[in-house]
Image: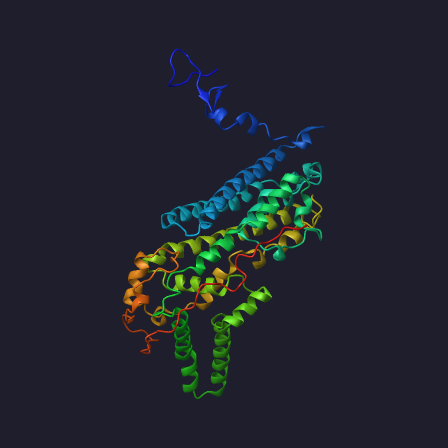
Length: 430
């Protein structure tokens, strides 16, 4: 019975209504007896243990511990995004935790190098002892994919069956079901982007001004030079390039075309959320958009690092077993190789925003009052709250840009209501 540090005469210290049974120290706090005795080498049960199986077990246990920490961070970020309004004071905390996730993922990518110190022959010495156990059976990795927002329709079938079929315990299936039916980080970020300040100001119709700027830019860099050239072949090539660029921009500028691309599965973000992402990207040097811009960048980093991890894992598997069937019955290398693609990127639309950025000289200048608003407004604009923009401010833009045309920009702003699919609940079915 441990002595209470605040007690007298050796009195015991109660914890949660119970007396402490053993002194809390480094060993007991980390449960090292349990942790360090969890490496049971299957090769040593009936014969001499294979040395490298110990490395194999330790590496995968370390992965699972880090997966647990990543889930802990992602869940905390999701909880903050689930609030009706994102507390502005929490933005820095969200950035910190997402940054932590990226650092953990970098570590997981590098950890594969340690496992590769084991040769294919070393692995063969104990591979058969693994029976049907496989990395595909990592519950935490599936939970991570679901909580980030990997679509069920994007998944590659495992032996032509649903990935959850490898889990037979009810508690595991319940966790998967919950991870599918709860709002993913993608869905929460999408709603947050739809509330981007600057999308709804009446005297600054961002999307209309952006559209005009795109037209002016394409005219200046392609159309006008094409019309001025005397070489028919050059003119033909330039006009073909102009059409290609215009069609590309029209696919996002035209809301109907954009929604059609969502229906085809080419895009995921709602049109309003995509506009918010473009707005943040173009004006990221504005104080109000500084942290949101970093947040979007971190989300892309997470996607990139998970893709790198998948690729490094695929290369390791190919080196270790070649084209052999995986221990879990999967097609091994071929199956894993199929997961290294854009279909598994959750925030692919954020990567593609760079396609639609325009040079600074063509970015529509913000009005004086909008600049003031962006310096004080929280990201989640309060419905019904008035602003100087909406109360008659002249909205004159400061400075001249290549797209300035004297228009006062008084067209009605687009509402951030999404495209009718936001908030749709997903049902988990096997």
